[in-house]
Length: 336
Image (cartoon, rainbow, N blue to C red; front, side):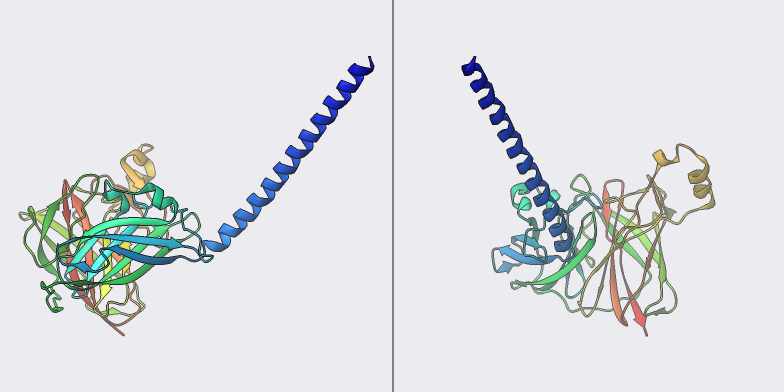
């Protein structure tokens, strides 16, 4: 009997010790989790970007690997990115003469390194067609904030880019290029070449005078063979993407177009209980487009933006028609 009591006593104490240890571990984990949450909220107010390239010296016509190391204010890897506009990270590339543009993402490449992304490094590949300086802009989003950063790369080689030219026309013929699948197009486009697979006519309606600090509305009209195009489709979860760069090459604004709402579309959105299946309403944030994007739209798309400085700006556009990616590009002048 004494042996049984002694055994029960040992068993009961052992259970008590285990429960105490578990309680201590849980409290410790909860405390660490709370500290971690607070730490992350403080860190994610800042995004730092460092660029490493392979090869280190980028040359014209040769594929370059661009690795962006993202860190927060504490120097820790920045890994809590959210998908926005169908991609985890957008890289916009523009030449200093404002005639070459690229728009690439880590998801565009089969060699995507998911393990490196867990450590805050995101990789894209790009072939620079001309020697000279390029501005690279990164656009990312977290649950709490959006970040836009830019930096520069210099490309060596004999094939120099042309001098910057002024072209303030409001009507042009532009070319479409066949997408590479899944809204992918990873090649550089020169706005002066005519090597596309299709041809379109584009004109813009722009105010006679664009002033610094005032909201401006620029309306794009798309046609083909003299007929308005009414079956444009969303590209990367937006009616149209824009990269706006000044001749100073002092930054890039990545923004998005809207589809002008007709009375018929407004009534359908208000009254049709199934309208949400026909249209996609997007959240509005600093880099998002606003309003409703139909599954098909056209012939008009509108850009609304504000310019903070006087000067000349190149507005690179990108949108989709069937399997063609268009790059309508127009220059505007902004005055004080």
